[in-house]
Length: 458
Ligand code: 5AD
Ligand code: SF4
Image (cartoon, rainbow, N blue to C red; front, side, top):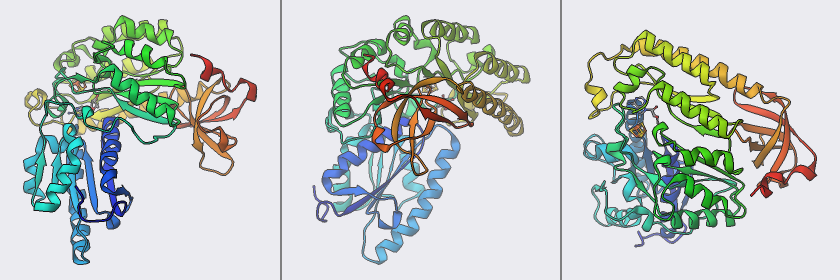
């Protein structure tokens, strides 16, 4: 399997776009390539292999890929002149959807692989360096990639992602995910628990379970995300659990109850609603109304009163009127979302919405996006300000930006900084918030004897 160099001497650069699932896949790609002697570099000039892990969810992301490839081609040519080969790989959802197009537009690319075949990377690298020419692998293999990825992962740090579910069967009218990531599939609970235990043994304290439709999880040995969360909460040393991204339709009674029952389950839920207008939600094929969403939020808040929400919104979906947009703004105010990802609708080839009549003009989309973003900035700041004077637990993730400072995460996923010793890294400490900005909280540590409370909550 060797590509000629001595173990440990090759440099790998991975650039990641898009969602956390891609971040997770990038970590796993680095892990499967480590036995071939690849270690990380940040510099394209030093890289013997570059992987661009792409996102196809919006148009601009694909265009970014081609401009990045153009720049890398120059580096690859310069390295070739000084006798160094560079393997250029495109992974992720653009690769899955447009493998042939990439080969046409960027023939100097060596490998094209989809999200489901990352475990075959070593073999692909060997094939590319033996034979030259494009190696393309965008299958949806029968066997899951997780059965072939190493069970033992290297240390990930205080917080880590863990993919438990992939793919989506919801077919929202605007979305490419069901085409690029395939049908919903869940990992068995035993595999998830083993990976979680391995992470915790190496110092991880907070695990975020990932899935395109994570609350549709139905893996063997658990059957539901709620059941999986209860099993994970039993692992000693897991201080915090989160999960994303969820669909409102899969927010079942057991999962809502888990938010009340499990102290490890953090009170911040990412629950995309996309729009506040029923006509648009129907056109999007979301399968719920704005009122259904309100009821779900009410039930979740009844289970866990300090629960905060973040969401995804699309402005300018085909057919969206001014009144529909106003309904979205009204819903944002009413729910009081603490943060949100806001997107302009971007037509994706092959999706029903791209063929729909009544496409919203670009200028209208721009204006609606600005309006929604301004409202969200206001709400995010208001949410952060609302913590001032409050005491809560923070997971310390490492040193802060300034000497003597430490950084961490609040239960609501806010970035926290405080004066304190770096030796607190990995601990859950009690703090009081004394200042807030749009993106972070400034806190002071409270008495040390109170520090351990969250860790012993299980
Ligand atoms: N245009 C704009 N935003 C989109 N999203 C998904 N598809 C599109 C699209 N075609 C957004 C949705 C989704 C998030 C991950 O990306 O809000 O929840
Ligand atoms: Fe895309 Fe809808 Fe599936 Fe989310 S639920 S991945 S938006 S199709």
